[in-house]
Length: 122
Image (tube, rainbow, N blue to C red; front, side):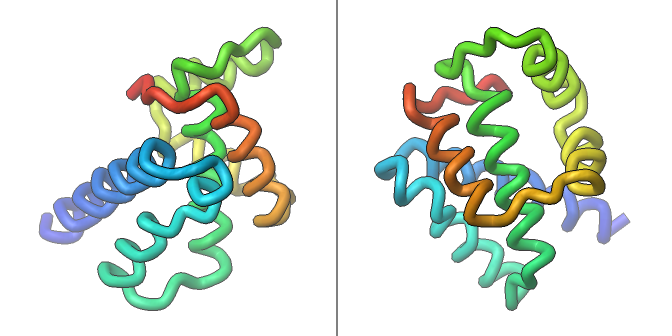
């Protein structure tokens, strides 16, 4: 039971820190995820390459698909948005398994997702 509580706190706080990164800095700084990484470093210690990659995928999903200021036109993007809204962590898990994008590429995608600003849908 304690593990589930800790996991839920970690998810909630990480999502909050991502929103802070997106809302309180320039697009370039937001894509660095500095507040989120700082929080995770304090909470779990060293951020491994795998954790960092997962974090950037999560940030990309939030910046593109869960951003009410980002207008999605493609039907496929709208389907991804529905899946992410329904269960963010289930979609994140599926995306992580098939995503071969580098961290640098994800940072660019995050910047693109934040071009019109950021307002969370969840």
